[in-house]
Length: 342
Image (cartoon, rainbow, N blue to C red):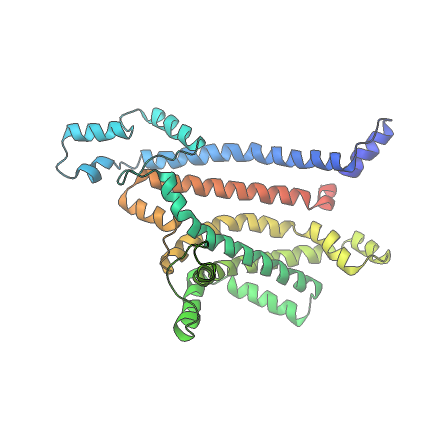
């Protein structure tokens, strides 16, 4: 039920009409509740699969800790230390209890808490993926808006050509081109390394900008294409024609009415691109020699450090689910006309 429907229904039944903000708040709460009811089962199922991947891998810390000369007594002691002597269901219960409290276990080989190791590396991946997301939103929304406003123009055709070409290029190919131009030929930017933001903001930006730009190109293209499609469809609707006839300014029509209702496809594609940004950050860390979250997961997988691999997967799952919750709530609150048509 929309705001207008709820108020009219209350008037018809002779009861005090609810305020506009009360109806909108209830609508937002319904969206949040519906999203949570979907996210919780997905989280439980995803974490179960994550645990089973490690439990059924056949990897054991005794081989790496004690070596080839390990005795059965030593193996039994190491298994008991890490809880591997318990049944699988008991291991899962203990592990899940730790996950819900923020305890992701301890590394098999260096005995450091997994959450501490991830915390040390997460800033690198967050810098790349976060900056890529910001660049993707700014330029994607800007290009999509301008292409819709000037549809059919040379600029619109140029944006369409750009989105078609960039969508076919993997981020690592764009990375190679950026390194050749800005590091090798021009010498403006370093091609490897990482410095924390709080230590040297300028150096941090110089090191992060190229991988972030390479990772954002596909996001820019998809958001621009979907936003342009959604806006063109909305600008042809009857309510837009009515707003023009009533003398509402073109800027208000575009940003207050058309954009709110036409942003649905772009928001949907943004929710799908978030996991891609996380996965792409792993590739970028390897290409630009950055000690990030993705390299920690890859190195741990090669070494057979199951708790770290499980911990990184859990963090990635939580990040993706949280971002999708935000996208769903935003999509539900920005599309009043679409909700009325439904």
